[in-house]
Figure 1 (cartoon, rainbow, N blue to C red):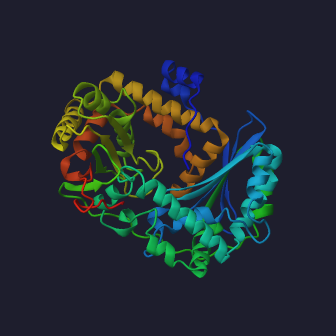
Figure 2: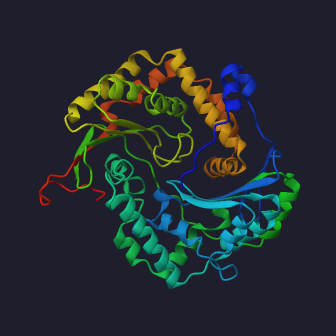
Figure 3: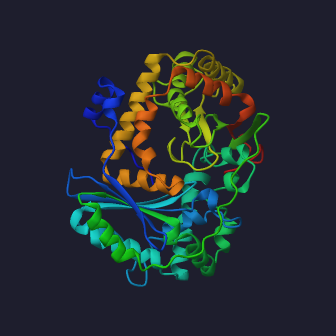
Amino acid sequence: MKRSFLLFALCAVLLVTLPAQAQEWKAATTMKKLPNGLTVVVSEDHSAPTFGICVSYGIGFRLEPEGRTGFAHLFEHMMFEGTPVAPKGIFDRVTESGGGALNGDTRYDFTEYIETAPLPALDALLWLEADRMKTLDFSPKNLENQRNVVEEEVRVNVMNQPYGLFFAIDLPGKAFDTYPNAHNFYGDFKDLDSAKIEDVQKFYEQYYAPNNAVLAIVGDFTPSEVFEKVEKYFAGIPSRSTPPRPNVEEKPQTAERRETETDKLARVPALAIGYRMPPARSPDALAGAVTGELLHNGRASLLYQVLVKDKKVALSVNGGLNWPLGNPFEYNGPTLMTSFIVYPPNVTEDQVLAAYDATVKDLAAKGPSQDELDRIVAKMRADLYAQLEIPINRASALSHAVLFTGSFDSVFTAPSDLAKVTPDQVRAFATKYLVSTNRTIINRVPAPANPGAGKPGGAQ
């Protein structure tokens, strides 16, 4: 699932024109834990008679067991197949009949389920979320249905798509060395095909437990009335034993890694460049988030200006920290700063890298100007505030933060923390992390006309 953050004009104007201190804002938010281990976060928003719900479970791509590649994503789909009490389709009808919306999302460190609707639907949706936290309709028919859906997604998004998401699948597989961080998160067909209904039920019982979840609710109510509803619907769900979190640490990278892949569908070549990043809550992480946006965010970004407009060695530039499967603030293990560069066929890989490296080295030597930094920080802060204005998005951010750290404070402090990043911090970050010994490069080139020639890409 992809969600865009709405950017309110008033919010952007205020961020640019008022001092950073005046923009510090924290919504009334309360947290408690039920006896069964379910953590509940409630945040008030009286701007409209609506609400947003997010249930995040501590299971994502990197956390799925070996031999079960793609299970986290498969289970995102299985959670919409209904339960013995509420058959498939009930959840959708209850949510959408009153003008609401719902979705699910799997990332490296969580799987989330989100809903937004008018306030009268709150009880019904809490009941439905509790119902599918208790059990699912574990039928071979439902498993086969959703296995086919997931495999079709792989065919559409990877096997039959130019570049095949190589910057999201192949690049981490080359950049990291351990199974949690390097395996194909979409799932190998042999793992998906070999799954039995008993395997699926065991996976659910291990990871979809109340003590492995955070429920966040944002809307037009008081915390006391919402906690009462949550206890009514969720308190009776028993806690379950969950597997220990796998070791996701990586040994330091000591040399540049480079690969070439061929692509039978691509018409022009492309580069994926990934630098290993510091831990999410390290002192360098915030400067890394800003650096990623300076380099990649839009046509005013440093890389676009140099590679596309000035040197004309690229057709497009995208990327950032924890891109494309998340934002710079929501990861809980090793991640990359990724650049995805499509370049003309009359330009060589070395020419693109020469211009790219010159841009990065210039940033490391001089840092950004204060004006450049102010511009990108204002954009990032505006995006964060706009996210927090929308109940469903605030619920999502709160749920993830608590799942990772046990606290929601970072959700509200991130905008003001961004305003404290200095040009020297960006320069120091680029000097430390954006070096060749810390990166992996994949050059994806069109396959030769002869289908028997060339080395097939890892994501084909």
